[in-house]
Length: 378
Image 1 (cartoon, rainbow, N blue to C red):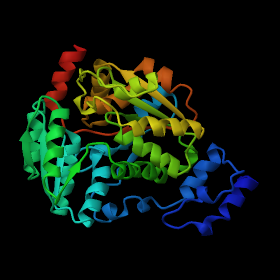
Image 2 (image 1 turned 60 degrees about the horizontal axis):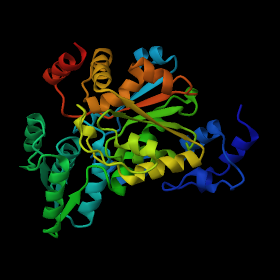
Image 3 (image 1 turned 90 degrees about the vertical axis):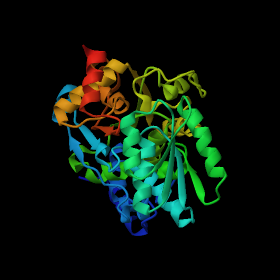
Image 4 (image 1 turned 120 degrees about the horizontal axis):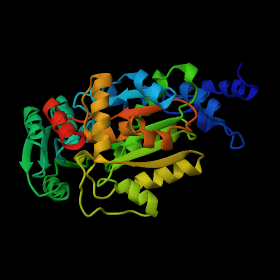
């Protein structure tokens, strides 16, 4: 039975428009509890109101949310998988890139210039092709040949430059600045990207069985911080401020974790992890700012750091359990559930279902997976 407060909340439904939420109409002296907030979030703005143009053009997919029987058994609570590995480019990046690129097209931009040796570049190339925009991608020398070939197959102009992403990024910015019809596309640091990524929260709310009640925790991999910025934005927009967010990284690529621990941004000297897709030497400052705001609103943000071996082990077990291949960067999030020490530390006290964002990754095939298994697990 709904409480009198909740019944009163429902009387506000007529005030809601496609761009608003019930939460914003509540008097300041009313603070919904977690159950009420989740109920209201399901009655708030329709999921299609975020990145609506990109959705209507079919530039990214509404991916399945499935309950994982093996992981639910391990965690002793319901664990759901948000399968963004099924996006067209192979990763969650399609969400933000679709919103960003379609917005730029409406503004008259003709060419997209990206700096990414991984999933962001592939997402730009995938979306750009659909929008019939020219795409140039500058990648560092460390980029896998598998990724370079995928970029070329999407008709992107590929330039290999620099020893690391930072050097490739510098050239990308210079090229974009020299051509007024071009726009520089950051892999993770743009508000339009974050809003596009926030659509994952809308979908989780729509797809989560009502019997589950409020979402207990969302587990995300963190590289440059685009995904966690989007998840935090989505949770705030939908009023789920009590949800725990677990930011997971690998040792040697933990720029968010070190910044979170130290209370200020940290620049890593180098990326020494196998999870090269997490390879931002410094996380965007907005990630820590939004994480701190989530805490002040009543939520919790935890930083989890796993080893490369734990990330690879999670990828292998995930493939065995769910028949999907993902990169070690995605394995960092999966390791929170698959690794006993992390599971006990971060999931044992969570009240409610856990959602793992299976962010995916295109830099993987069966040969690479077997090599990682040999290198780290045998």
